[in-house]
Every structure is written in structure tokens, then in C-alpha cells.
Image 1 (cartoon, rainbow, N blue to C red):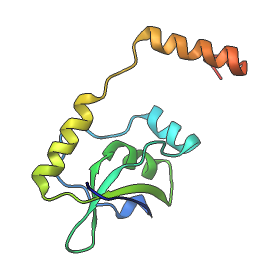
Image 2 (cartoon, rainbow, N blue to C red; image 1 turned 90 degrees about the vertical axis):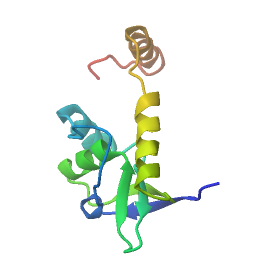
Image 3 (spheres, helix red, strand yellow; image 1 turned 120 degrees about the vertical axis):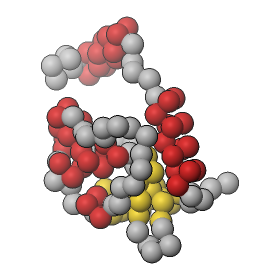
Length: 122
């Protein structure tokens, strides 16, 4: 089992190497969300032999944190054997992710209204 260690870091110190996405630029909505709520799902990083932290997954989240002006974020350190394993982890994370369906979004808004009196605009 791979050890997973939460670590607080300055997002500007994280190193970017090859990644699966062609464009990992965070959009304005993600930056606004991170500014308001912080990063909800911690990016995964690995430590190099030179003690640098390299982003494995969460490139867009890290970019959004930087754009939002966050000085410290929590990341999860994970041992990654080599660059090939890191790319494999990226592929798995991105391939398994899917967008919410329209009915799921509508149901979520309905629950927010029922439970908390919040509208989609809120």
C-alpha cells in the first residue's frame, strides 16, 4: 500500500512536468470557486530525489489556487516510482471522472432549496 501524507505547501513551489491534459489552465469558474471555498480535493504530488514536490494530479486546482492568491494549500504526497507511473495515475483519474448529468444537477439544486432554502443563484 502506498503511503499518503497530507502536506501544506505554497502552490507556487510545486513543480510541473509532463501531464496528460493538453491544457490544464483553470477556468474563471474554478478560480472563483477556489477563492471562495479553497481546494476541496487535494492535489496529489510526489517528492523527487532533490526534495522537490512534483504535481501528479490536480494541475488545474494548483493553477486555480495560484490565480486565487492562496499562499498555502494542502496536497497529498504519494510515492510514485517513476514518470510512467505518474502519467498512468493521471490517466486513471481523468478517465474515471465524468460530468454530472443535467438531472443530477437539477436534483442537487432541488435538495439545496429543500434543505437550506438556497436557490441556484445562491
